[in-house]
Length: 307
Ligand SMILES: [Zn+2]
View 1 (cartoon, rainbow, N blue to C red):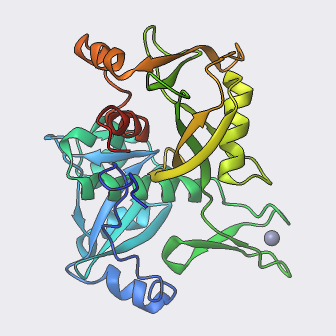
View 2 (cartoon, rainbow, N blue to C red):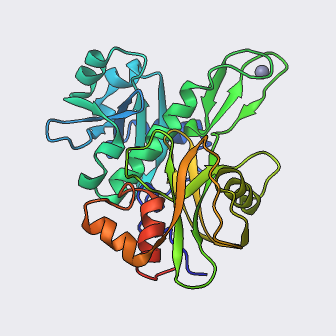
C-alpha cells in the first residue's frame, strides 16, 4: 500500500528509542554522565531556544544545575549512539528556566517547524509530548498516591502501598479524511469549522471513541458532522501530533452521494471542490491548511493525484 506518512512533520523515527536498554536505571545514569549525551530543555510545552531561535542543546554532563531543577528528565533515544534527553523546567518561573538553559526564549515547536530540520522538529515534538504526559500523571488514578517515573521516563508506577499500577504515555488518536464525491467531476469535501478564520476550508477530522475502529470513527464523524455516508474507507498514513497527545490517522473515502448537511455545531459549512477550484484558491493566497499538517499533505496529494 502506498501511504502518506513519509515527509510529514514530527515523525520519521529519527531516534533509536532503545526500549531494551532504557529499562535499566544504571544504563540511564551512565548516559547522563556520558560526555556525548545531549539535553534538550523544555518549559511548559515549549522548547527553549537561543537568540537565533534554534533549540538549545546542552551537554548533559555539564548541566547538573539544570538537571537538579528539572521536574522530570526523560530519555528520548540514541542519535547515532549519542543519548538524547529532555528536561522539564515547567515548575520554575520562565525567567529562571531561560537562565538555567542559557536560552533567549521559550517557543512552541510548531512556530519553528519551517526553520528546523525534520529530525529536530520531530525530536522536539516528541520531547514536548512526553514531558506533557508526565506533568499530568503525578498521582495514581486508582489510589491517589504519587507516581514515579521509570524506564527512562516511558512509564510511571504508583508508589502507593499494595497498588503498583503502571501508567503508560497516553496517545489520543484522531481520524482525518479526504472524502471524494461519487462520479464526475472529481471533487473533494472541505468544511469550514466553527471558529476558523473566514475563508478557511479543511478536511474533516475527529477523535476516535472507545469501542470504535478507526474506520468506524471515519464513518461516524462524516455522518455526524456533514451528513455524508461513505461507501469505502482506505488508510493513507499517519502523523504524530503530540500537541499534546494526538496521533492523526489519515484516510481517503468515497461518499455515497453528494448531499451534504452540516451539523451547525462543529461545522458551519461544507462543500465539494474540484481540483481547479482548489488550485484557484491556492493561487489567491489560501494555503491548503497548515504546512506541517496531514490535512495539507492529504489535500496536496489529492490535488497532484498522488493518492
Ligand atoms: Zn496507586
